[in-house]
Image 1 (cartoon, rainbow, N blue to C red):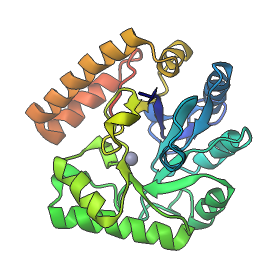
Image 2 (image 1 turned 60 degrees about the vertical axis):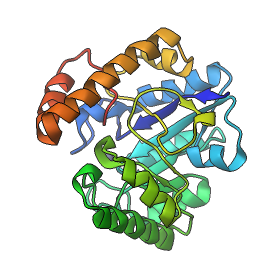
Image 3 (image 1 turned 120 degrees about the vertical axis):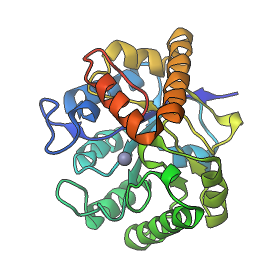
Length: 263
Ligand SMILES: [Zn+2]
C-alpha cells in the first residue's frame, strides 16, 4: 500500500501574499511555496503530477502538486517545480483561460511542453452538485475537448470546482474518458483505493511550515484530526446547503489560525 500527500494550491503570491484579485486566504506566498519544495526534497521526495503517478504506477517517494483555477502566478511556481525535474497538474476552466490574471492558452501549451500536466476544473467553475447529469456531461466533455485542442495533451483528470461532487460525476467522467478525480476531501491518497476520489490537502496562506511538514511526513495524528474536521464540514454542507455552507466556510476562513481543507 502506498500513501502519498496530494497538495492543492491556488494562486502563488509575490513577496507577500497579495496577488491581484486572488482570494488571499487561498494565496500562498512564493517564498513559502519555495520552502515547501525544499521541505519535500529534504525528506527525500520529489514533486510529481498525479498524471505522472498514474502513468508510471510509481507513487513511492512522491508528493503530488496540483493547482486549481489556472491563476497566472502558477507559471512561475511550475518553473520552480520543473527546475528540480518535478511535475504538477494545473486544473483550469477553459472559460477563464486568458481572462485578466489567468494563464492564456499559449502559456498553458508551453507549460505542457515543459512537462506540466494541464487538466480540467470544469468548463465554467459552476458547482457540479447543482447541475443536471446533462450539464455535468457538457462541462466534462466540453472542457476536455477544448483543453486537448488548445494544449495538445490528453485530459484525463478532473477536479470539481469547490470540491462539489456527487456519486454520478465519477460514472459520467469515466464514460467520457477521464481516468480519475482529484477531490477536495482532506487526507492522504492510498493509491490502492483507486483514483476516483483522490483526497487533496489545501495549502492556504495560513498553512504553517510545521503543518506542511506533518502533511508530507504523513503524521498520523494530524490526519486523524483532519478526518474528523472534514466529516463535520461535509455534514454541515449537507445540512446547510451550498449557500449556508459558503457563509459558514467564509466565517471559518476569517480565523487567522484556520487551515481549512475544503476549497
Ligand atoms: Zn476552483
